[in-house]
Image (cartoon, rainbow, N blue to C red; front, side):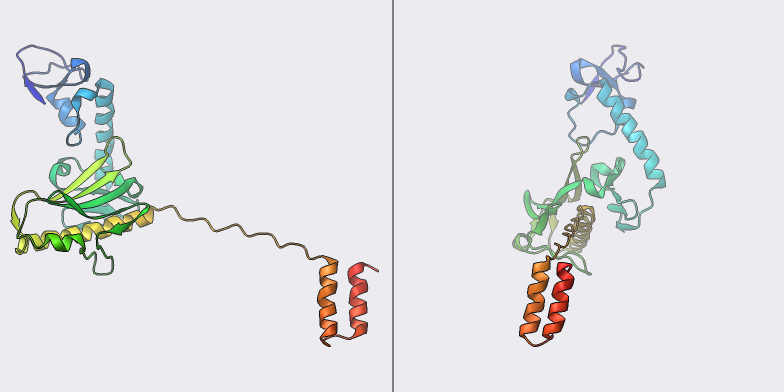
Length: 259
């Protein structure tokens, strides 16, 4: 994305000279390195599709996020990977590309999540879908099995990450990369990373369950009025069964008929 130039051209956002290191956005407008850093674009963002208004919005969004981070108090966290505030229903990831961004999201932003091993999804879940792939949740956290168990037969893992899809056009995907190079599956480090993945998946499922809209109780149907004829038939049955006398039946019948 970076281009080197000796021309003293100006940044389309701040108006300052772009210097040697700058970036091209939509319509060949130039973006200085300072504005690029302030925007903290998500990984794989296509700058060519953004104009100066989009960049300004992103910078302001990151400024608001920075303010929110200062008051963010985690009530639950997985190592230094995932931070959660259960009171505000917010969370952020602090690993990989997200470590420099720490964008705060809401529980309800999560559409689904996947555990990806060597390019294949082995566990998935999220709003409106039950967890699949042999994942179990309980006091001890998630237990990953099913497809993942077959993967463990390979001695080396080259990719191990969690993909979280969000209902946010600005931040559609967040990754938790746990393994980005070759690592032995029977080693201590991989087992530790597996435990981290288990806990992250459990917490993601819990966040999704909390965010699910509560089903409203069915409205109580008003009681249908009982007719005089129905009441008379009821007391006639009591008369025939010998529960009440003829006099009691006649008196009740007159009462129901308003005589």
